[in-house]
Length: 190
Image 1 (tube, rainbow, N blue to C red):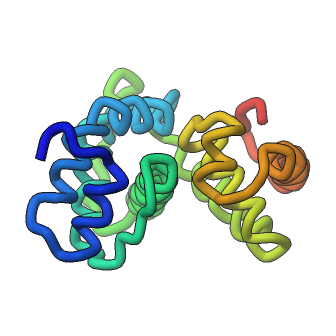
Image 2 (tube, rainbow, N blue to C red):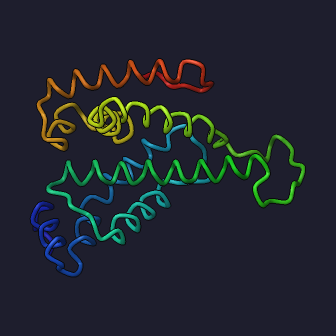
């Protein structure tokens, strides 16, 4: 299977060929690690790059509904899977932070993890839900550009739209999210 392109491997996976999706992940593993590092930037140490890539693999490989047409489309789906994992993780951290099922144990500042940003992540997720209600493509463009770090051309290819459409949607999505996140501490530059 080495040497086969990703599009052919994705088609083989759709047709049920064993190992095709594994081969795709093997080919893009380094890109997925880069994507995971990008998504985890500044969000701490507990959820690491390798774990995020492996969780995304499990999510995509067990869903049975993976329908990626090519590399950019696959990377967009992987980015969405990673974002969903990060949001689920943030929800769990927020629940733990508010008591959850944990026994409270006093800790000093040196033991705190740097990833105590679940509220910000959940705020971004809520803001994206608002954007999705306005225009689903705005959310998709934001996911590709902000979370996956795809270029305008890669985003256009992944979504099947023109680069100019991506540029317009990117500006609109950022404007909506800036407004929605205006009062949320820890907001990154959009």
